[in-house]
Image (cartoon, helix red, strand yellow):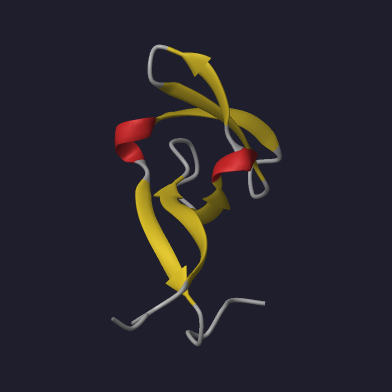
Amino acid sequence: MKIIDKAVKKVYRFNCPNCQSRLEGESWEFIDIGGKVNKFFCPVCRRERYITWSDLRKKIIYEGQDTPK
């Protein structure tokens, strides 16, 4: 048995519901307020916004892939 890929981190991609900016964040950056709704800070709007879990798209970054800096 061999290891194919080693996951480095898991991020979520989404659009801000207000300004429609494409954003990316890790799970610790979202605050679960209940009812499948999360609170996050939008750096473009510079305000706290709300988004549902179903609007988030999970992306797993593996070792050796180009990571954004």
